[in-house]
Image 1 (spheres, helix red, strand yellow):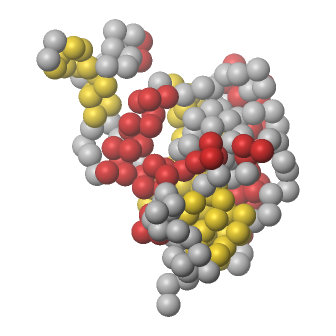
Image 2 (cartoon, rainbow, N blue to C red; image 1 turned 120 degrees about the horizontal axis):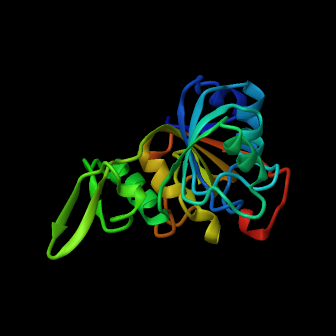
Length: 230
């Protein structure tokens, strides 16, 4: 019997070792699997490469992970905002490496990995510092930059509900990068507020099919930032 619903978050996260590349879902705090991140911190894993849209907010979730010094490099779109003081301090001290990726390119590169594509051509970034050293091509009179897929050893994502097969549904904007990250990682660990019985999720509403999810962990959120984080 297939049952991906796990009882121990610690046991699931213990698969992650030093040096792993991890995709973490979330658009700021919306859809960020903060409790999984806290569990990762407790394990003391180091030398991580993190792929995320942002570089943390305040001292919560991803920012809290950065503050421990566990992250060697972050690949993201928006490393700086009004509450990104943790990243700012680390970056200016030379303690973290940054790969800046335009948001659309970030999504396309993650999707390319999930779909098994070799690379994608995108107009975004052409003629800028972000395109230096990269292959370019003119297609139908328009200039493009070749970008390679982004894949990960693990994806930590947050969904609203899941079943024991790993099928997931999301809460509005908390969906963001979760579905494509689940496709682009070798192992996906999904934090959900509720594990429901098989058949309880309307098949037409399932966003992430269970084939892309290896573990489902039911966790009651310990911190409420906004309604969008649910």
